[in-house]
Image (cartoon, rainbow, N blue to C red; front, side, top):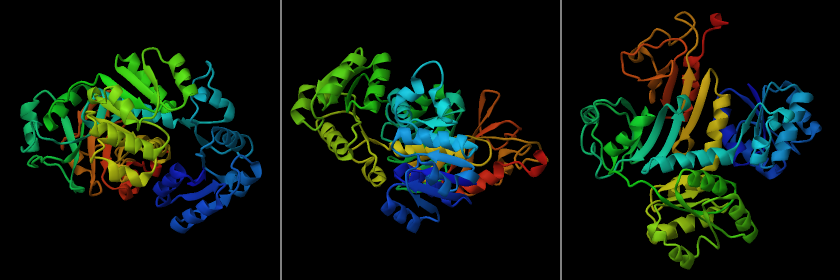
Length: 458
């Protein structure tokens, strides 16, 4: 596939890294020639230096024979104009745009983005807000991801003392929860993958990934760590797009929310646009302000400013002063693995969240959803099985007959809105949705080949 990526920043570069080894012809356009040189030295790609919203630049980048355009620059207007030109001048079949301003997505009854030829918008702030809100629903979880329209969820959690299953074999979960069907997808112990089996004994500090129907997730969390108290009080640092979106969603759900914002004008705007949230003018790293606002009584402190260092420092300070759980928004990829799980409970990478949404549109075969895990090194995919016994490599096979790459597992089957955990004797049917855990990103291509139908299907 010939893919044209506009914007070589963190998102564009990470998308290129994910796709460059998958037999794609990739060209990146950016204004920064130095950045492009670094990317070209590191990846097998072509680069063009120029303004992505100019027709001549798109033409020079090969837009005329491009299969997919990804407009991922930091400027919404550049992305929208590029999509418009790609449709009108070059008839590019698929056009995906990164759009940060909610006004383009939410304004009016008509879809404004249709006017710009955008097939699929990617809204980073909206994605991050939804991911954050999931964590408030399940205290103690590190990551909560929806599949099959939210009917089944993949949850990452650190096993801790107090969990009912700690020190016991995994098979005992059926004794504890006889009416609950779940699937352990992976366990990481000291960053080493352990394939879960019935006789695997869970240890403290294991990072556990499990799949279960939405209603069963709280019970599963209790098996893996001591029951966390429900979240009621939340303090948010940063009243930008994400901070405002999250505060609005939390106050509508009945949480007690406070938000700290350094810009006075923004404080006034937040006060006018939030109904029950207390807006505070100040800096989140101000120890006196945190103490005055009873940080030690807060169930969750979220640092969501645009400055990584401020987010890190304010979460460390809040944790030291008694906040029960702290979450930091961190853009710099090198910080994420370094920080999470030490003094900071959860580190959210907006770029990684965005990349997962983009990859769902780029994976070969009928891929319904893709979620990046563990800093992008691991993936979870929802795919649709097509064809019949002659044209499909999966239809008619039992789970234990499927030759999956080592480290990849079919975790669940969704059939006619019914969720079935992938037990060894379950038979795969056409139109089933399979939820697949891929332990190593390099194996994605093999999984894609497995789910693709043979030529006779068409």
